[in-house]
Image (cartoon, rainbow, N blue to C red; front, top):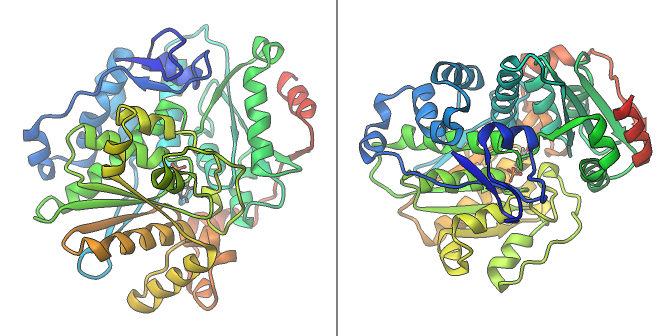
Length: 432
Ligand SMILES: *Cc1c(COP(=O)(O)O)cnc(C)c1O
């Protein structure tokens, strides 16, 4: 399988090179040159296969010959070492809980898969120099990346996060690993962190010293394994006759974009709904036809505070840049913080269910779509454990959240982070 750059001005590369580079030399996102649907027989009988086998069938064409079958199965086995329960909330609505991984975030899947792919490539090449993964986080990515890459040989990780703008638990998850994981606390916003990372990737002097790659969802090895969730949901619902609609809380639109890839592979997903917070570039685009990225606005669903969703170019590519086809497949809805809190209360009062603010937006979008499509099954993705956002979950619900073991064990650990305020500080840290 080859990957081309969506800026159309860089050579085609294999999976391995796309993973190591992250972004193409022309700064475009990589996209697979072919998408071959899976056999109808496989999809019709999906319940006969275990999750690792399903995931292997889903991803193998995108990896190609770069990782042999046994090694790839191993990587998938380690990636999917936890459950993805589908919890019914009423008759036709389900929460697909993606937060049972080591950092309680759905990003664990992509981060673990990518880390193990890079680890595999390093192990095959004794001469290879260390790779430095440089990533900016608004909260959730960092912990998943830190945990996924912890102790992976040949890989150094540097995580930038905005000082004072991540929750206490998220900060602990970022700053307590040590070893090959370094946390950098930046005076500024997430956009400032992101700008520093972008600048580093363009800095000729720096990239001569360091082999840098990204671990954001622009990396194909983080983006594509997210297809697994949709297959998992379908596998759990395959006996139901209704149409399946997926509602995805979205920020960079990587997750939902992977769902659309799953649909391209032949998975019977009838429609997509994206829920966003006040950062509503995509809903505005679908309403007006005008794509107008903006600086991000802070909300209580802060992992989705993205003003210029990086994966949206991939979504356009999936639908051949055809606005009408995209619009017939995607409904995009946006919600305020007040509505999000109200949804958290509603889920708790009606179902005794505690959602985090991101999942709550997925739920709101699912509900709204259901009003005009009452026959369909709605699956919303619950992308983070509520404990990670308990600071913004209304009382008394926040007190009812049980602290999972993985959180209890990091709370007493001591934070280790380097505080910086300028790009040159980052650069000298990376060079030394
Ligand atoms: C990253 C994240 C999202 C948004 O996913 P995208 O792929 O960026 O659209 C939603 N919820 C949580 C909890 C996240 O961490």
